Length: 254
Image (cartoon, rainbow, N blue to C red; front, side):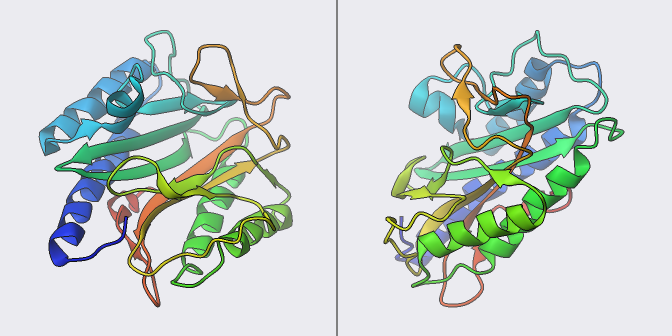
């Protein structure tokens, strides 16, 4: 969507605060021994406290309030009671929700407790590359150039990018135009970012794999080669200069 009046910006800020706060508090609540379902239920309580509705539930009938992906799971992981969090796990939480007709999307990967499996470098690369990419976005910038930046920075850090999971427009629904904001250079993508528009920008930084595959449950994307992927995502409003990071309330840990 594009912001056309102050009331729309207020609406976007409210839902962005809801998802950002939920993501941050879920990260703080996560600990070894609890299940992904317990963590998800906690996130659901926070969203309900804001009066917000889970976007994946509302849009797709997803079996959870949020998406929680562990280790070789890349995205859209189902938060079941069979997934027990362990010290050193690479965990991704993706929170998207709707409030008063406005939608926002926010995600982040982190290592639970001690970095027993050396995932922290990957997590930090994903986080830092996202921030670098976001601060290059303004009205008129080519979407393909941001994808090129993300891919180039990933290679500099010794990583690759997932090519079949992308960022997207957001605001009045979970997925809007532009429908694809890739993590790689796509010379056929001729779109440009528009001033006052709302987008969710994501980095999917991988140790080796370049594609994610559904694992058979109809939701979860995984790597088939043992690779690990760290994802970070913010909902932003594009301006002629520095973008407005609407989901910045998770910056305490992100």
